[in-house]
Image (cartoon, rainbow, N blue to C red; front, side):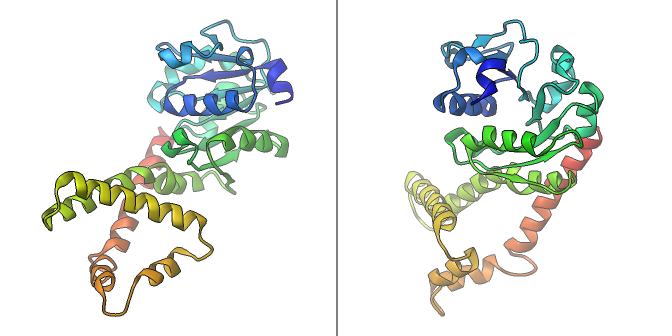
Amino acid sequence: MDDLATRGVVLLGCGKMGGALLSGWLSGGLPPEAVTVVDPRPSDWLSAQGIRLNAPLPEAPAVLILAVKPQLMGEALPQVTRLGGGGTLVISIAAGTSLATLEEAFGADTPIVRVMPNTPAAIGQGISAMIGNAAAGEAHLDRTEALMRVTGPALRLQDEAQMDAVTGVSGSGPAYVFHMIECLAAAGEAEGLPPEMAMQLATQTVAGAGALAAQAQEAPDQLRRNVTSPNGTTQAGLEVLMDEEAGLPPLVRRTVAAAAGRSRELSRG
């Protein structure tokens, strides 16, 4: 990983998302001694990785990753703001923390990339979206993409305002899917299935359909048609689910709009 091994990487916070990134980097060959992690409550797994844990920061690391919870950002940032000034790429995966806020802390001449990952990153099945400030050039975005790719694809946005929509769709989206599994299992129970069987059927159905959608050549609407026989059982169910007034489409639009709206509120502080 070129100068990452020599100049080092600093990871501020190492919860589930930070841990997923660190695990991917180490598996990809980054030497543990090149990583400095600042975390007040390190897990047993983290303590066993051979990294520099809560050690003095390198003078000019190649990359600083901000992986603390948004509500802890104000408290945690003073520990690393001296790394601003242009020599270190700052990558933030904290939801709701705008580029403007980060520039106030590190300086506008610091290359900063804001990234929104999601929780399936923990098993390498996530997706991220990123946007850089004016000081972040193509090389900085390339490096960010390479670092995030260990948890799944990384997309580039055209405008920071799009980050709120990303938050509403993919950032919060896993929770919507988990709730869909809950609802599907509960509906199966209501039709007479034992609870454990209903949950297994619902979970594997969602997991399998998602994997098929990700791998198939057809678009999701065509995959839906492939399953739907005229006047059959699937059509009967879809007539309820796809109702334009009371079905899933308007509900999902309201759901994503609510999450995106909350993201905008958080970004404004």
